[in-house]
Amino acid sequence: MADLGLKFNEQGLLPVVIQDWLDGTVLMLGYMNQEAVARTLATKSVHFWSRSRQKLWEKGEMSGHKLLVKDLFIDCDRDTILVKAQPTGPTCHTGERACFFSKLNEVGHDLNEKSPEAQGGILDSVLRIIAARKAAPQPGSYTTKLFESGHDKILKKVAEEAGEVLIAAKGGKRTEIVYEVADLLFHTLMVMGYHDVSLHEVYQELGTRYGKSGLRKPSESKP
Image (tube, rainbow, N blue to C red; front, side, top):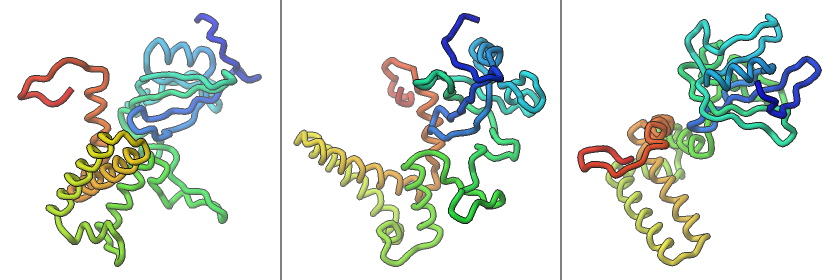
């Protein structure tokens, strides 16, 4: 393999962070040596060096839950790799989607208490709150009030906020555009929460369209 300018440690290894290419969730941390890097680049399937077994292994070689490479990046010191990958199943050996699911706080952590908060980004967090308000309404909550107002009210708010985005964009004021787009995103998430649609489903749909171009026919979905 050509010299890629990577800086391996004394054991000939470097840490590798695996990130879901769709929503940015950190799936796991592993280690690669030069051969693992070469195999990963050649096969587009993540390979690691096992420090306990002292051997090269492909993620999912036994379970079938592979990590298909979308992109690789190196950090500024060239001693850590970030892999954006498409998982074909749960990444963690416990059967969880990602290895990071136990929240650490001042009193420690509980491996049996699983939290999804490490997964996704702010939109995922907001949608989780919306789902929680749907399951357990709270007095004084705007989200609860919208759910109590019914489906048509939620849809009306989406239409109203879309109009506000258009007006803000027409005015060209950046702060107003940001504010109104945030409102539109929130109320769109309300629609998703009402219908129990996850962001991951939307990410997957966008993933099928990514990199494709061309005009669509009237009977086809958007590109």
